[in-house]
Amino acid sequence: MTKISTPMKKSIEALTFLLVLASNFSFAKQHSKEAVFALFVETSSVLVDSSHAAYARDQVAAELAGLNFRIVTPESVTQAVESLRDGSGNTNMKVLEDNNMQTLALQLEADYFIHFTLNEFRSESKDLPRFDRKIFQHRLKGNFRVASSHSNASVFGKSLSAEKKIPVTSNVIIETSKSGMINQLIDQLVKELVH
Image 1 (cartoon, rainbow, N blue to C red):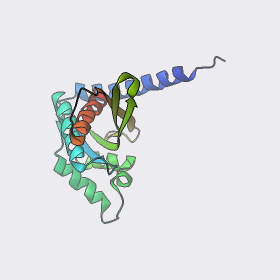
Image 2: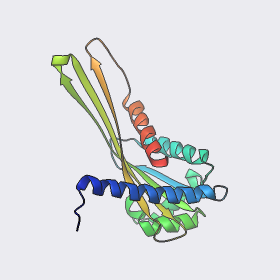
Image 3: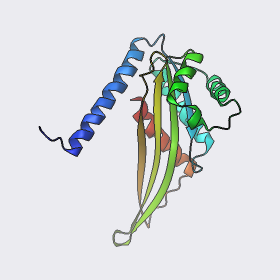
């Protein structure tokens, strides 16, 4: 029996995931006049403000709408998620288990329910005095899961990561806000999610 190398396994896994994702989105594209997406975005990190979840939701919704998908209003989705909590005190992560995502998709009359989470933001800097440089590195991690209202087996997801490195010399000053940087990284995550 032929042994498959780890990089080859990862490539096969990535290809399989992309085929599943493409087949689901291409199915929806073929039925784009009918396909409806419900989208719930949240943050699980205190370093990522809830306003960034709203920004990410709007970006994902805009990208999907640009592909001619219909989007359930954010208010309707939030209200539906809150109704599942029913005073239980459970987190959204716990409430949005796979079966509940399918239930929400059905309840909202959506073909697909996307749960997108912004998990971690990290900034680091590295001094390179020999080259008169300092490199600022910013990372944002997230993940998403998609459930179909058509089948219990149609749940898939992926972890996403965006990174931006900014090299600076002692003669250059670059100013950017943390919020602006997170939004730039969200844009990268959204492109990875939708395309």
